[in-house]
Length: 134
Image 1 (cartoon, rainbow, N blue to C red):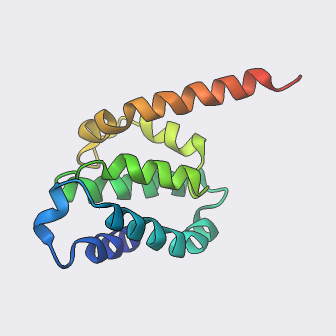
Image 2: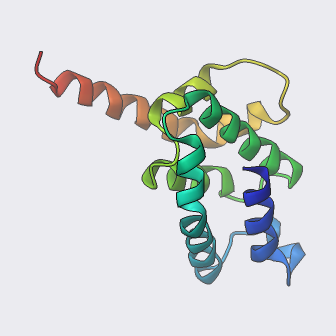
């Protein structure tokens, strides 16, 4: 996961490294999404049905964002991408949220950036389970 993130980040900001802290352009966002889509089959192959590995992948993303001073909106974008592309399951996102280890730097800032989305995810999951017939 770390290698994928580093490659995509390098591709996005290779020409203008000072841009990494500002909001990405539409072209950069499109490029980022296309690169993730290109790696999607490999990520799914390794992570499918392995919640523990998915949580590790989220920690790799957290560490990557922390190392680059949390580029604007990046963590939330990747959470949404990983969820929408079915790379990481709801259970892994929620396990990452609840894990209180200090082993990985930047967890507080990471949670602050994605807390609203995680709350939505929990709510959506609860509503989905309430609608299922017994």
